[in-house]
Length: 219
Image (cartoon, rainbow, N blue to C red; front, side):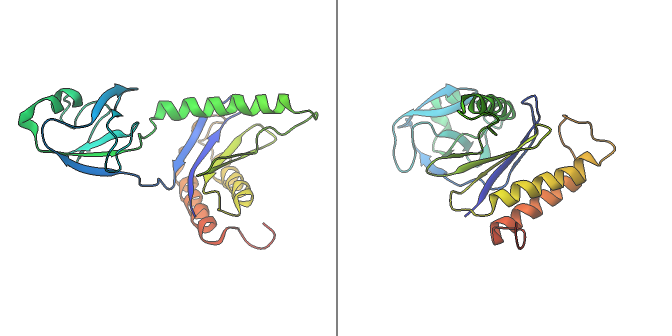
């Protein structure tokens, strides 16, 4: 079981904190000879597989590294366009690591804003007045849990569907936010959270939740 990530979204829908606690490793590294027998293309500033699934490499997987060096978007570590680099026979044999494309900071901001809108839509669609909005979304591989405070701050946790104690964890994160962000004289409301004590206590809370599933009796 695992807790994958934590998001904090302000009442305007802006992402003010994000932490990736655990990223499942679904990566494949393979050495290729010329010519490359998978088809690659540029997509959203990344290079992804468009055709030629094989040996664990899937359509949609992104190029993560070449010859052990992490790529930078659609460029190699040396700044060369990946597709142009792989067209040159002199660069073979070449070792390429593929995996799920990592979300950029801009993509995380966009997703937080989208969830904020979905939360509001969910509240408006409710047949009952005063609905809380979306509290949980479930897929086959993770659950999204959301807790909104009275002031409109949303705390979102993505976790393994089997992970227990998430409701208690959300309230613990709110407590940490109150103690180490709101009480910090240098922190401005609605702004990104940059506080070392907040980071440390959040990581500790996630570790406890993963091991025990709760924060003591009654939580």
